[in-house]
Image (cartoon, rainbow, N blue to C red; front, side):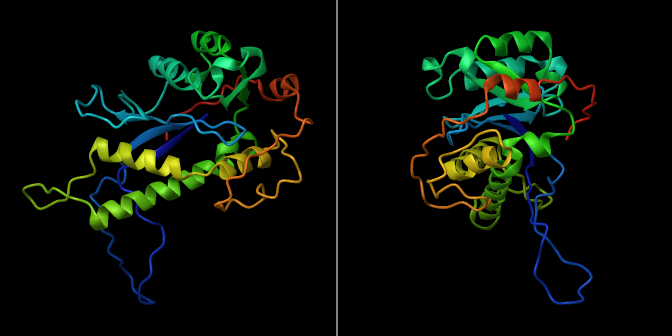
Length: 264
């Protein structure tokens, strides 16, 4: 599991214009710094859990949201130890209800996430341990041990930008009295998230686990490569029996960091 910060405006960091031009105009709604958090979770077989989005609000919007996404709110737009109910909700509605979880012995599955304080309260640990073992990535090592950081997060953000660009060019827009374009609605953002996450392929997810060296796959299957690029090949993956032992992963990961987290 990992949390990804996304803004309502996602302009590209690259543009094409005349050489030597000092100013380049980008069309946005001015909401580049208005962020929300998307909680993503995937499994080593390439499966993807239902996404959760945390909007920066004190009260829930009254909109009718699409199916397939969990919507919640927090004053700062992300999880922290003071609103651990969001983390508990994620465990109950996403992790506990992941595909085939009913048939998995809690002792035979591991939930891996970083050492953010909201993940490590005693109450949250007790809830997690009812459904699986817990492996915590030590502070500062997410770029080495977090599977989503290698592939899936990058792919998801890229597809979110594509959704935003499509909305900017062809979407239906409303304007303020001063002529300023309003940002996308919460419902529109939820649809972007669903579309972007659905487009992340199983191969992309598996590559993340492979790069983090947390899971090994049958070497004869050529659909797993070292490239981050996604393919249209959706062959089933046969898992090698020579996998990391659960206790080895837990021993390597479990570490309670004192690292402060000031938000995205």
